[in-house]
Image 1 (cartoon, helix red, strand yellow):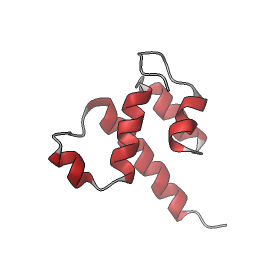
Image 2 (cartoon, rainbow, N blue to C red):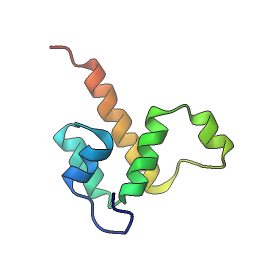
Image 3 (tube, helix red, strand yellow):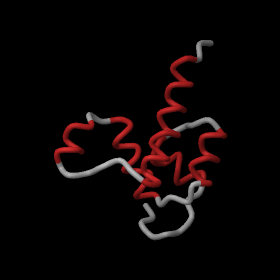
Image 4 (cartoon, one colour):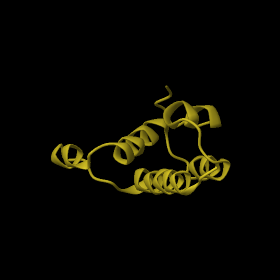
Length: 82
């Protein structure tokens, strides 16, 4: 997993999150975040936030943007029925 300021690829995103809508992947890549920031946003989106807050973490900056993209994608997937 890349921890530098290198631009993420589609593969980097799907390695962390799994399958996503193409527009969600494009939005994640466009925000210029690192893979570490994506991992943090994924943790916020899929975990109980109380331990994160208790450890002094806050949701802001690019992590907050990524979080919003992830949550919107998840909500869209939950609404879809075949």
